[in-house]
Image 1 (cartoon, rainbow over the protein chains, first blue to last red):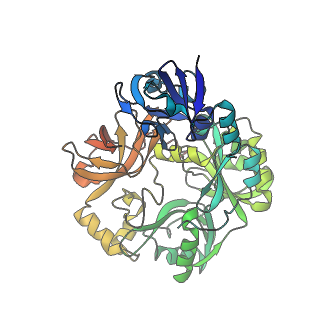
Image 2 (image 1 turned 90 degrees about the horizontal axis):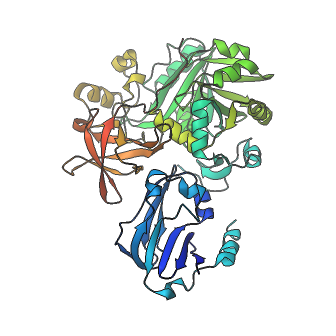
Image 3 (image 1 turned 90 degrees about the vertical axis):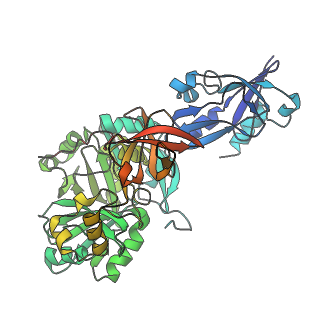
Length: 125
Length: 369
């Protein structure tokens, strides 16, 4: 069974077994506007929770995407290299950034569930 | 030059909000960066049809004197450009310089009968006004007028429908027009590389004017985000980034805007510096750069040569929607300024290959006749 969790920096992580898929939230893609470039990590890279995982660039600016959990990158979404706008079109689905091997389940503690994240975003307006 | 305190609003502010714009602070104003269509769609719409921009934050001045010649002569003491030779209704690009030949602001000047009209950058307008006044120029700010730009290949047919006389205007000319019944001063110019008009409209009529233009099927509202990507593709300088008090017109590749008479006679701030640069050459030059990959190289990105030595810096950079790839401009050492020179762009610590490239990146499509 998979569950989605969000960070305050608007990344999402969906965990299935020990595979954690990471992306940015629909709110984040809307704030960024048209995504024109995504810099993905190398497969095999070990990332730490809260550190830079990827870079997403809109027409206006570059923004960092932080790893919501620690782990090793096992797969990246190559689609984004040729079609970065996939992030705008389907942020929670085809627009995923990377899959990580979840090192520590407690990393998920403190992340927001769907309802808590919705409340958090509503509070930003 | 950013101002503190509450953000100023143009007369079109509430209309922008009504149209769903995302508002951001810019040069002390609360301005639309994009509408719901988004920057890419707005950019492409302007290249394909007609985009309408609120540029009322910019400064509009009217300058008088002892006839037009007196007005132009007073401005020429502060600008290296030739404004005295303008015929009525003719427009010219220029800049204010300092004693080091640096650019204090860039501007557009139009001869309107006995007067000279000037449009300057929003962030510089207060300083420009003070500078002109302190130097004896009889200048009057025009805060009761909004400024709208209609840009794109369909701009002319839209304008011809609402103001038939506009069809007689060619690129870089101005005229008083009645547009949809509203008396305006329009110039055939802009900041996108496209054919188009910039229209000075009384504030009281600005909303009605804008709504009327937006009724035309070709016209959509465009925000500052697309304004920036459009001007970058057109190779046009952004004041504060590509040209500043620390860059001269010669380094910036803007010598074309300084006519022979002014080069010989001098008589403007920094004339000795510019004369020396024309005679001896400059150490750095503004160039276009095409990154080879897909990663944009933003302003302040270091430019290195193939051996990794720093040779300059990107001053404007981003994604060029019409090209579907990143574009940039910046300053490089004169020896590396030749078209096709390979360079490295240091983005997030990695050297990305690029080449010095010819500008504009998107061809200008001005209406010259």
